[in-house]
Length: 614
Ligand code: M6R
Image 1: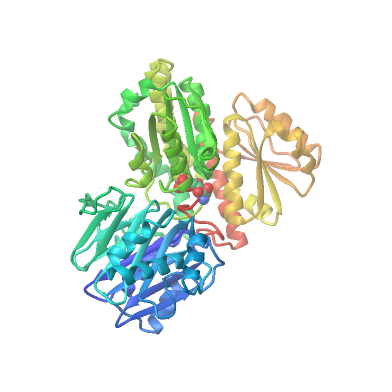
Image 2: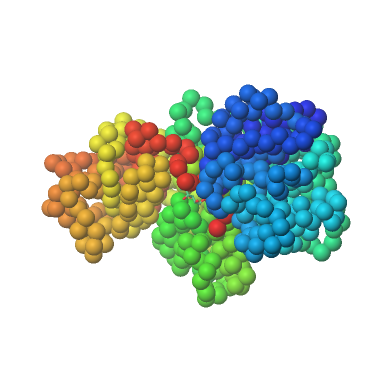
């Protein structure tokens, strides 16, 4: 999604803005732009990468001590230079604007502004903001007030930064839903969509709250909140970010996705540090109020999108099996428009890597507004919007995930969700001490098992070669591994652009079997669980129709390679944790197929890392 970087400093900020943009590239974008103040606006925009923008900024020797920069992920209007940010209000503009999010009433505003004689150059909703602020600036003569008045008319979830030609010492920013934080430096002040863009200059960050309007000067700043009815200054806590430049580096890997796949044993160990010396999991892992809240609840509702939704689907099995609790898992973008039945004693769990996914945040607010009393975030980003909106929080501690395809975030979410099932099982009297300590023991062993599974990479590469030319691939799983088949299919399509679909293997005969022929490879997850015999029958159904089978099994699964059926054995059967282990080869498979197909693995086309618009 769009990324914003803003700087007001003592020295030239061009390189700070461009470095900030390159740190935000992982969010996904299709054009980039920058405007610097230096005796007037100097603006450059391109549909190329940030590196291309950097090159032209250097060629033209663009400089300025105040500037705004942006990566755009197109929503209104095609990716093109004229739609790229920053936007002006007409040719002789007094202001420049960058924006993340969507202005829902932009058409009404556009018509009104056009009727007032204003000309639009782009197809974006952002240009409406530029015109509206300019319009109000004529009256207020002060940018801060003009932005304050303008945002009362803008509907939607968004963040903006505005720079005024007449005041080169100041930038005004407004936060309403999509992430924006301030960075307080020693030789300047900054703002950005996330901390990774600013740690090059400071670790001191302020996470703005909904409705916060801030003005930044080189050595000071002021924040008011437009939604609290008073325009008096508000105090916001200054946080010391724990991010390091090393966290954001790629190390010796070719892609962030590859690095993040191979980090999984160590990030699993990070999480499990908390239970290292014990045989039980404490409710405290989820926050101070967890014990009280967990004993009140009698159901769980999980809200999430994409990969995080798949984690929720696995967790449903665990919550039913380990804690004997009813659990519903909903796609957040669907749930937010339903009329759910209120179940006050339901624990609503929002799962999100970024903690900024607009649909997940909206679904959670919706559930709360509907009367669901208790909420928990399973999230990878401390201080994200999600973690600030829930009663309880479990941080997955996977470190920054830069590749658009989610990998280590998923397996750490699963680890956290298993701990949740254990804690709830214990508190509700459904899990014996003995079973608890078995699960905890298996969790402690997880980093070792993950390392073993990663060793299957060379065999996976052989599969990748065979599968890289495929037009379509089918993924099959059953029970707790069906969501893993869904995750494998999602991973493959998002980075290799091969059409992939996942089916619960028992559903084959209800339709998809018609697709099977020699050109439809089928990847099957076949661990040694109680459904193995059923999966084996499904394999026969595919073989009988000429389908080519690629089977992921553990050491104990009694499936052998034969003509048209290739087996990769992972490690010993991991019981309830088996879905975590079977995820790894599917991530590697997607990665190696994408590598062969030479796609942009870390920034797949049309996708964004942090989906901050609906
Ligand atoms: O940050 P979140 O976990 O809320 O993101 C949800 C999805 O957008 C995300 O998982 C997406 O599906 C990934 N690109 C999948 O790899």
